[in-house]
Image (cartoon, rainbow, N blue to C red; front, side, top):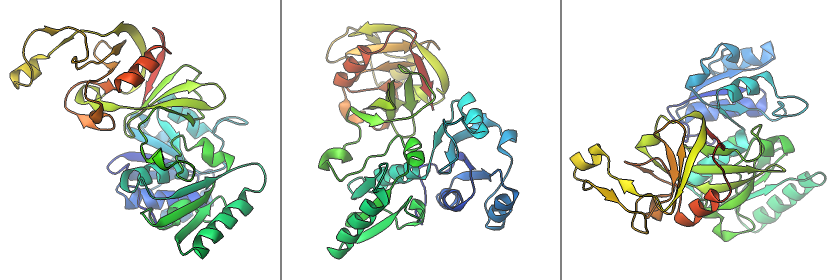
Length: 336
């Protein structure tokens, strides 16, 4: 089993306690998450409880304390209508993900260069998955085969260099895996914080910005289940930023002034620093309507993908210029 440590110490709801959902619950629990599971089947709820998984009706949860809803494959995310648990999560801007996404996040955290082959399609994906796994195993590689083909992905051995995961992904699983980043086609995909289009299905309208603080990604939703994904750095000013905000104002090469806390800690001098390449806010800034949060550039691109002491949401200057040109005042910003 692959313990999911990326959500350690956080509350996670799981809906769907069949094979994949039960294993996902166990993997989250093993990784230190506070898990609560539920199902529309009383028998599955009882089985999960007997396996040591905490259960409770998700309709009775305080969703403001939930970090993510993990949805089992086959439970409707969008069609023919969102499941009621999805509605509860979306109402509180809680992200909805699946077991493939959990795997991708764990791989990205512990072994981003570990080989990962993801296969999907209308016809032939099971045959293709089995064939690739057979070729890899025959060549002497430690090969893990799973996903929609029958073995839940989180029941496999954890990702590491020298071990290949060959995973069949159903359309349901892809819907719930916005961060899927297989390695078969491009050796540079371990550099996950570069701007790139990615598959992303969401109930949010085109043009919405979605900020995933845990994974250090900003998504700009585009048509046809595509999003532009940007790597971000996070400052402590945005620790409590969550829910729905809007872009209130925009500026090019903004000026910057140190906060009283920075001055007191002798990390900066008093006064206003004019906009320019040496300015900590970078090339562009988009102020949010809470009056204290912003999306801006940075003159320290190495901090993208990390948490820092000061500031809010930062992108590299090339990326913030690109994003700035795509959004307008009033653009919705959903923060998870």
